[in-house]
Image 1 (cartoon, rainbow, N blue to C red):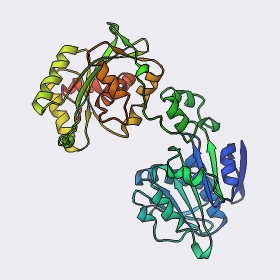
Image 2 (tube, helix red, strand yellow; image 1 turned 90 degrees about the vertical axis):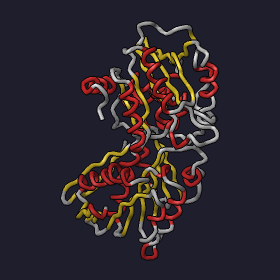
Image 3 (cartoon, helix red, strand yellow; image 1 turned 30 degrees about the vertical axis):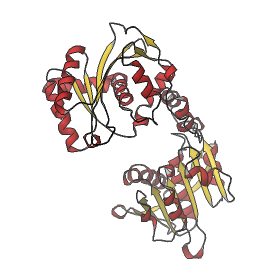
Image 4 (spheres, rainbow, N blue to C red; image 1 turned 45 degrees about the vertical axis):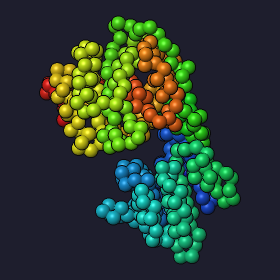
Length: 415
């Protein structure tokens, strides 16, 4: 661990950096990348580096993030926090997302969900936070702005790796002249809680851990799961805790030549093992869906709560409410879909890779395994998504039971 000393009026402040952060800060390369695992201090060092450089040379600078929400909640927040600690912020114009420093430098904050927004001002330097979530076009536009007052400006990028086919590897990972890449695994950060790494690692597959925790540029091995991970047994323990989760075919996809399936997965858990116990799969009309959902609920019994994916928008909410009304008397939870489907099923994948997901023998086994072995490259992933939803219900019991308790009080659903 190294330290950097910065003046704050008449005081001396000691800022602690871990080794990778110190290497990033010490470099004068034109383009500098800091790639790391989650919690490795990427955003922190990006903000600190920008503040120090903008304090040392007066000019116009810019901070970029993939979306406005990430800019506001992460990059801008880190910048303000460190800037206040150092005492180098002279004024803030929050409505304009603009900050003046005591050095006379001005820092703009912009989202790059539309890369064209980076066109306009000439800059002395720029920082792209979470650069791997931005398109290559954003980088190309930004480096064209690094020419304030006829001087060559610099660019820094902080990000989590997204494979060797991604533009961030092409730019920073190939040893191009005047370009630096510093890699920092999650465990390189001594300021994290001692239990953080192991807690997250237990939820990730080996492939995802190498990317998200070790900060490596790795490629997917074609699919995210293997058939041999799922042993087949005759039955789950009677005393196991059970849920049923429904993944409904999205209405707007029904017009395709090969439409999605509606899938309901019953999953049980006991002694650390998760059993995919029963799967219903079909292309059902609206009236059929309601009938089949209720039939399986009666088959499962009232002690097996029912969850269902709620598609975005008002139509998704209306459909979920209709299904909940059809299941009056059952414990029901409608769960809004969010995030990347592969990412949100990763805790389930991690348990499968560890040998903790078993299938109960049934005529659906082969179809289920065929689909799973093809994700994410196959034509369908409905059974996979349904299994991941059931797993998440079982793996988050506190949040789940709080929702169920509220549903019981209002009899239908907490909407």
